[in-house]
Length: 68
View 1 (cartoon, one colour):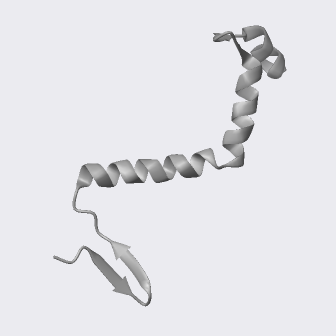
View 2 (spheres, rainbow, N blue to C red):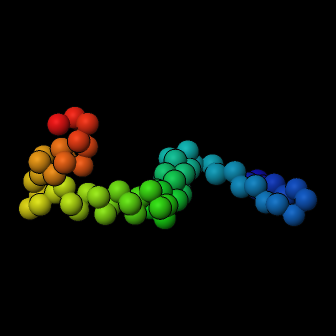
């Protein structure tokens, strides 16, 4: 049984195992998200709000003065 299709030089793969397909899809999405600029910016912001595994609500409120 042929699990791939070639058309004009492009290869399309058909994965027979649905669970494996879902795991691969999730992995590709996670890999793309981690490489994004938004992820890096959020990681830097997270460090200023969490100290000793505790959320510093005062710092959060300073960051968003509209709500204070």
